[in-house]
Amino acid sequence: MNYFFSRRAFILIAILTSILTIKSFGQDSSISYSKNNIKEKSKLHPTILPSAGYSMHTNWAAAVNVSLGLYTSKKADSTDKISVLSSSITYTLNKQLLFPIQANIWSHGNKYNYNIDIRYLYYPSQNFDLGMSSKPGSRYTLIYNYIKFHQTISKKIGSYLYGGLGFYYDSYWNVGIKNRLENGITSIEEYGFTDKEKAVGIVTKLMYDSRLNQLNPKNGAFFNVVYRPNFIFLGSDNNWQSIMIDARKYLPFPKNSKNTLAFWNYNTFTISGKPPFLFLPSTGWDDYYNVGRGYIQGRFRGRNLMYFETEYRFNITKNRFIGGVVFANVHSITNSIQLPIYGFAPGYGTGIRIRVNKHNDTNICIDYGFGNNGSKGVIVNLGEVF
Image 1 (tube, helix red, strand yellow):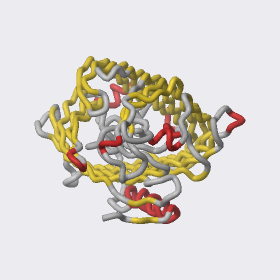
Image 2: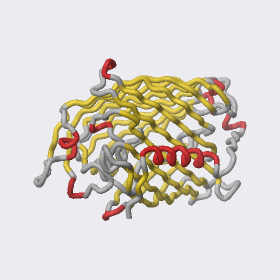
Image 3: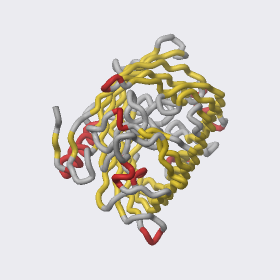
């Protein structure tokens, strides 16, 4: 069964869903820290984790992950948010190399937020036909190098509310097609193939964040809107505009328990222009590669994307060393550049959590997800998926 929406209706539904994600599930409540927690604020709490794992889009992989939680001021009090720096280096049996450096820094009193995302990828990856009707048999491999530099600075303008500006630079080069389809042209060739793609823009950002610990949120809410116009005069291939809407809500459930019910609504829309192929919204291509658990990265791609997920996080052992989750999600993408949205891809799964840092509540997250048409696979994260 297909579900059909105009683009305006689709964007309206996404915005309303984002607002409901924050407001309709109860009021925010603050995390209270004990005196011992406050004493720890002046210390660094790194997590260094060599690991091996498997996922649908990487095959077997070896990695070293580093996550650092810290407070930027020795005067930090119980309302200061924890700042997070993270990096990793990963090499996979698919001959992929991933090297990200990410930072989310809060000043004393949470007056300013600095967000940095730098990464390099050499990344042979699976791609399919455009739209929700694409079949598994339309799979082919793209090989490319990719460098990303995103930086935003936001200032507090209200209670938990921030406004900011930033600079986004993304570049793909040495793009090549491997395992070409025998019975037809690939989707990137239909769309317009070039061996390099670039987008550069000045972004504006509006953010609401009442969470204290982004590595493992227990309550509070997060709402982030980023408007990105890309310009030829800055170095982009085309003039095009997009908007990203990301909303999350966390509730203790049952009330006063240490279990958490979490909601996530993520949307990316192309407002105008024609983005290069690799900049089109796609499954698993959000900033942390988590949209669409249950499907391989790149499974669905199109001009607009809307995603909703809910997850229940619960403790298994009394000391919270081991926990578990169950989750369900659904996402939808345009079937064609000219057509409105229709069709949905549901996913669901379960996972375990292993607490590796008691100071900042960092977990190793190992999930197994399922999707349509026999899609299934393992997803591994350091820190919660959202």
